[in-house]
Image (cartoon, one colour):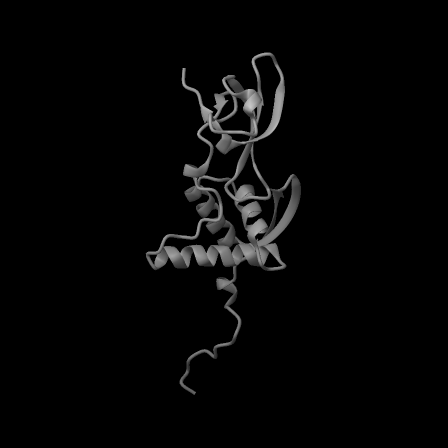
Length: 167
């Protein structure tokens, strides 16, 4: 024996990361996710770097996951993100980067793009944005609810069919 402590397959108690269960909102439902503290910290860092909230990032990972367990999918996403960052490659961005967010927000005025066919009845009308939300079915895709000057509300207009009006 060399006098060194015997190594085992498990980490020393001081190296263990506590597993923490937290709730995130995915598609309007609270979902519990159990992750080690280090993964929660990493998830917060990634969401801040991408300009999205934790729930939005978790929802994006959930929608694109190939694994049965959301916690595992998040761990793999975090691992992949930092491996790419460490190697100098651009991290895989599954969440919507801030540059892909609509150029407008609630209370802004927009109009339908002239090339649109689906919302031709709204051409030439200034519309007030009353809500913007991410589409659950498509990563990086947003829809807006708008209100016409006479108070009519239209729901679910794809954000890429609208353009910001600057007065």
